[in-house]
Amino acid sequence: MPKNKTSINKDIEVGSKTAAQVERTFPMINDMASEAYINEVGNRLANAVPPEFQQRQFNCRFKIVNARDINAFALPACYLYVNRGMIEAAKNEGEMAGVMAHEISHAMLRHGTAQGPGILTQIGAIGAIFGGAILGSPELGQVAAAGLITPYSRNFEKQADIVGANILARAGYDPRDLANMFRTIAGEGGGQRAPEWVSSHPDPGNRFNYINQEASILRVSSNPIKMTPGFQRTQQYLRSLPRAQTMEEIEKGAQGQQGGQQGPTPSGKYERNVPFPSGSRTYNNGGLSVNVPANWREFPSQTEVWFAPDGAYGDDGITHGAIVGIQQGKGGNLQQEFDAYVKGIIQSNTYLQAQSNYANTSLIGRSGYTILLGGRSPVTGRNEFARIYGAQTRNGSLFYVVMVVPEDQASSYNNAFNNILRSVSL
Image (cartoon, rainbow, N blue to C red):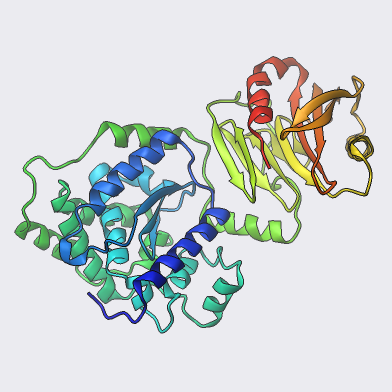
């Protein structure tokens, strides 16, 4: 166990605060079956940590990050995150579990707070993994300024490899799958830039060989866990989702949000055949919670979030999907604030005209109004419906939801739109 001047309680405090920051910054996979699976594997591994390395005060938690980088990381106190890209790249559960066991070892050996001169070294290391994406709070900014953004040392890497191999054997896996996963990760680089996990977890030298040597002296099951139904289901589900962003792309999106960018990125492409809503996931950010189709992307800005499937977003906005946001009040009542918002929409989209009068509705548990707009979209050349809902918050701001869909496909979107209205909360 490496020397560490930081208290266990401080590890727990740092881990908790940093985990909250991570989950505000990066999108998590909110599929109940996938969450249950990753926690099942994670808890099996955590319970197999050798007694001399156990930290009983730590309550390990496991989450999947919706990012395509081949990456995984553990915060102090055993908050562990596995990127979707890592699970998609693994050849079996043993390889995925190998990376998780390695990260659990870092947490149990308290490498994050033992490595540098300050107690927040691990936060800096995570900043390095993310390319600085989470350096949004004053505390994290101080870490960057202190020069604590460094990968793990090679000595700590070897310790995590050896302890990780022991965890795998004790949990019913073959430690050789950890060595195999390193080759899988290296192969994913394709001769280009190394995957992020390799950058932050440097090879101590002869990694593949010494892990296999360690495996040869451990008591390994004659029928180790390899391919499981849970792994197959989770991997298949993740591969069915729209292409995930990289950490760098997520970082740029966060920077754009801070800079006041509005709406979708200009990298989108409009297509005639847009996939219909499929599945459901929960989007949580800054107090906003809403259920949207699993095959819709989100594009947050300072005041609103746009949700749309592939082929339905670009420079000129969205052609299918929803916009959820809040507009600062100007001192008026609900009707005045709603009037102002609707007029702004029509002025910005001159092809739209009112198709109905205001109707009473309920939104976020408050009384509100709704109106239907329609017109021929200059983007698709098709008749488009845009239904607007609005309700006034306690501080007088207008909370709004806009549903956008071609008229001839409206019935296919009713369930998705109703699910948004039922679930949205602030």
